[in-house]
Length: 305
Image (cartoon, rainbow, N blue to C red; front, side):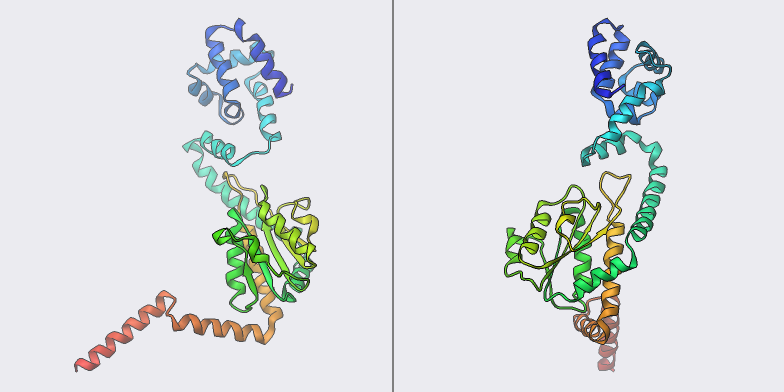
């Protein structure tokens, strides 16, 4: 039985139910996600009725068991595209008793995402993307909201050995301004997962309209980013949390960077060496500051003598 039909059946028969069954019925209609996710005892407790009341409610509608009664609710949940709030509510519905299992699920899902992502995308796909990225006059990088860390990581690492990257991050509301003068020799690297950022989709369309090439990292071959892309890398991003995982996205960005460095030859090595020297001149890292402090202390001691 479909959930819509079943919920209507409960609503229509509601006046004829006993007071306790009415309490239970009202609760399952008001909290259908809880029915799908919670144990019978936990659901009964949240409704303020005895677990046996839930069993009687199921049998009053012709179900052999409470598990059969849950089936329309579970089907509804599986068929519905979940938003962030719904996923967060599902997490809380599991309660503290599921925290240890949740930790293992997060680990397992990310390992699976990594494995599947690198299985789906062949070595030839990576090399084709690198061939396009490496020939760009200017490389425009865009990844909004939740995938911004992926875009930011790629931009930072890439800038260690190439100086032609432009990060489209929309600072000051000037997102579209960053694409000004985009031309046929330029490339855009765009990253977005469902729900897809409209700015990212428009940036790809703009780049293609102006003769450039587009390399896309997204979660589906039918993603709106994919339709105008020259190359598409599919990123698996399943997560038991309320938000999609970016672990595989970062790994793919890391792979692209590694291949670009290999293709960059000696000039890439020289540029990385210069980048390191520049960072050293600012004592950018903790160990450098500690070494500098020790040298300074030794120098001061020598002067006192």
